[in-house]
Amino acid sequence: MDQNNNYYNNPNMGGCPNPPQNNNDVFATDRFGKSRGVCALLAIFLGGFGIQYFYLGKNTAGVIALIGTWVLCGIPSILWLIQGILMLTMSSADFERKYETTTSTFPLF
Image 1 (spheres, rainbow, N blue to C red):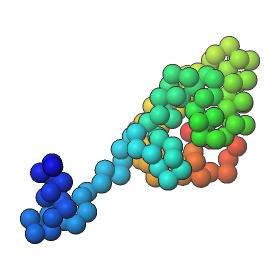
Image 2 (image 1 turned 60 degrees about the vertical axis):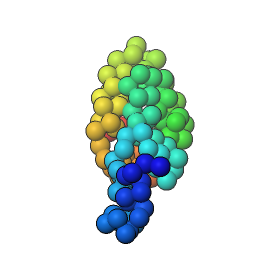
Image 3 (image 1 turned 45 degrees about the vertical axis):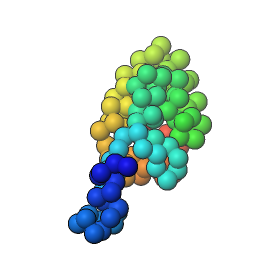
């Protein structure tokens, strides 16, 4: 067994009863079962298709992104690239507030 696990799980060894959690892990799933890192990578690489919005369950926003990219000849793809980078750099709480619990139909930034 890992010594670090023994340290944290055994209060007699001077450790705390609960190991510290990294609350800002990019690829950890949140309470909605979504990963900020996966969503960010989808926005960076497939944002023109609105895949990041479909992943979040915001189908209307996904269709708007898809049609907007098609009508404007891919120019909005720059916005999805920026959005993906911002998703990678924001905190998990901000991501959840801005993209998952919002009532906005089309959350952009």
